[in-house]
Amino acid sequence: PTSGIFADPLGLATVVLPEGWRERLQPLKDTKGDVCAYCLELHDTAVSKLMAGREKDFIFIAGLLEKQLISLNIFIERAATIQHTVSTNALLPRLQKLEKYLRTELRGIDLSSLRTLVSELKK
Image (cartoon, rainbow, N blue to C red):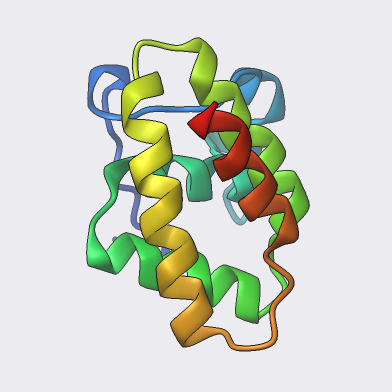
Protein backbone atom coordinates (compact mmCIF):
# COMPACT_ATOMS: atom_id res chain seq x y z
CA PRO A 1 0.00 0.00 0.00
CA THR A 2 1.23 3.46 -0.84
CA SER A 3 -0.04 4.90 2.46
CA GLY A 4 1.97 2.48 4.61
CA ILE A 5 -1.28 1.24 6.14
CA PHE A 6 -2.62 -2.26 5.69
CA ALA A 7 -6.09 -3.12 6.94
CA ASP A 8 -7.50 -6.59 7.28
CA PRO A 9 -11.25 -6.05 7.46
CA LEU A 10 -13.45 -8.71 9.02
CA GLY A 11 -17.16 -9.26 8.81
CA LEU A 12 -19.19 -9.09 12.00
CA ALA A 13 -20.21 -12.71 11.57
CA THR A 14 -16.59 -13.82 12.01
CA VAL A 15 -15.76 -12.13 15.35
CA VAL A 16 -17.15 -11.93 18.86
CA LEU A 17 -17.04 -8.40 20.31
CA PRO A 18 -17.88 -6.96 23.72
CA GLU A 19 -20.91 -4.77 24.33
CA GLY A 20 -20.40 -1.13 23.37
CA TRP A 21 -17.60 -1.73 20.88
CA ARG A 22 -19.17 0.54 18.26
CA GLU A 23 -19.04 3.53 20.60
CA ARG A 24 -15.32 2.93 21.17
CA LEU A 25 -14.20 2.69 17.53
CA GLN A 26 -11.01 4.66 16.90
CA PRO A 27 -10.63 6.77 13.73
CA LEU A 28 -7.66 5.95 11.52
CA LYS A 29 -6.56 9.01 9.56
CA ASP A 30 -4.47 9.29 6.43
CA THR A 31 -1.56 11.69 6.04
CA LYS A 32 -4.00 14.50 5.15
CA GLY A 33 -5.89 13.98 8.40
CA ASP A 34 -8.94 12.49 6.72
CA VAL A 35 -10.58 9.51 8.39
CA CYS A 36 -10.09 6.49 6.14
CA ALA A 37 -11.30 3.78 8.52
CA TYR A 38 -12.50 3.07 12.02
CA CYS A 39 -10.60 0.50 14.07
CA LEU A 40 -11.41 -1.48 17.18
CA GLU A 41 -10.13 -0.07 20.45
CA LEU A 42 -7.35 -2.32 21.83
CA HIS A 43 -9.33 -3.78 24.75
CA ASP A 44 -12.12 -4.74 22.34
CA THR A 45 -9.56 -6.26 19.98
CA ALA A 46 -8.12 -8.28 22.87
CA VAL A 47 -11.59 -9.62 23.76
CA SER A 48 -12.15 -10.68 20.15
CA LYS A 49 -8.77 -12.43 20.25
CA LEU A 50 -9.73 -14.14 23.52
CA MET A 51 -12.86 -15.49 21.90
CA ALA A 52 -10.93 -16.69 18.84
CA GLY A 53 -8.88 -18.68 21.34
CA ARG A 54 -5.87 -19.63 19.24
CA GLU A 55 -2.34 -19.82 20.63
CA LYS A 56 -1.34 -16.75 18.60
CA ASP A 57 -4.25 -14.85 20.14
CA PHE A 58 -3.02 -15.53 23.68
CA ILE A 59 0.47 -14.45 22.65
CA PHE A 60 -1.07 -11.22 21.30
CA ILE A 61 -3.02 -10.57 24.53
CA ALA A 62 0.06 -11.30 26.66
CA GLY A 63 2.06 -8.85 24.55
CA LEU A 64 -0.52 -6.11 25.02
CA LEU A 65 -0.49 -6.69 28.77
CA GLU A 66 3.29 -6.91 29.01
CA LYS A 67 3.75 -3.65 27.12
CA GLN A 68 0.97 -2.08 29.21
CA LEU A 69 -1.04 -1.22 26.10
CA ILE A 70 -4.18 -2.57 27.77
CA SER A 71 -5.38 -2.84 31.36
CA LEU A 72 -6.22 -6.35 32.57
CA ASN A 73 -9.14 -4.97 34.61
CA ILE A 74 -10.72 -3.17 31.63
CA PHE A 75 -10.12 -6.22 29.44
CA ILE A 76 -11.89 -8.43 32.01
CA GLU A 77 -14.79 -5.96 32.33
CA ARG A 78 -15.28 -6.09 28.58
CA ALA A 79 -14.86 -9.88 28.41
CA ALA A 80 -17.57 -10.22 31.07
CA THR A 81 -20.08 -8.70 28.64
CA ILE A 82 -19.72 -11.78 26.42
CA GLN A 83 -21.74 -13.75 28.96
CA HIS A 84 -24.80 -11.88 27.69
CA THR A 85 -24.32 -13.07 24.10
CA VAL A 86 -24.74 -16.27 22.11
CA SER A 87 -21.02 -16.96 22.74
CA THR A 88 -21.46 -17.29 26.50
CA ASN A 89 -20.60 -21.01 26.55
CA ALA A 90 -17.19 -20.35 25.00
CA LEU A 91 -16.22 -17.62 27.48
CA LEU A 92 -15.30 -19.74 30.53
CA PRO A 93 -13.00 -22.19 28.70
CA ARG A 94 -11.26 -19.31 26.90
CA LEU A 95 -10.68 -17.43 30.16
CA GLN A 96 -9.36 -20.56 31.85
CA LYS A 97 -6.97 -21.15 28.97
CA LEU A 98 -5.84 -17.51 29.10
CA GLU A 99 -5.29 -17.67 32.86
CA LYS A 100 -3.09 -20.73 32.47
CA TYR A 101 -1.15 -19.10 29.63
CA LEU A 102 -0.60 -15.82 31.47
CA ARG A 103 0.44 -17.58 34.68
CA THR A 104 3.21 -19.28 32.71
CA GLU A 105 4.24 -16.45 30.37
CA LEU A 106 3.79 -13.31 32.51
CA ARG A 107 4.90 -14.29 35.98
CA GLY A 108 4.15 -11.62 38.55
CA ILE A 109 1.04 -10.23 36.84
CA ASP A 110 -1.94 -9.79 39.16
CA LEU A 111 -4.62 -12.10 37.75
CA SER A 112 -7.17 -11.53 40.52
CA SER A 113 -9.76 -9.86 38.23
CA LEU A 114 -9.43 -12.75 35.77
CA ARG A 115 -9.79 -15.32 38.55
CA THR A 116 -12.84 -13.51 39.93
CA LEU A 117 -14.63 -13.65 36.57
CA VAL A 118 -13.71 -17.32 36.12
CA SER A 119 -15.16 -18.07 39.59
CA GLU A 120 -18.36 -16.15 38.80
CA LEU A 121 -18.83 -18.02 35.52
CA LYS A 122 -18.39 -21.38 37.22
CA LYS A 123 -21.45 -20.73 39.41
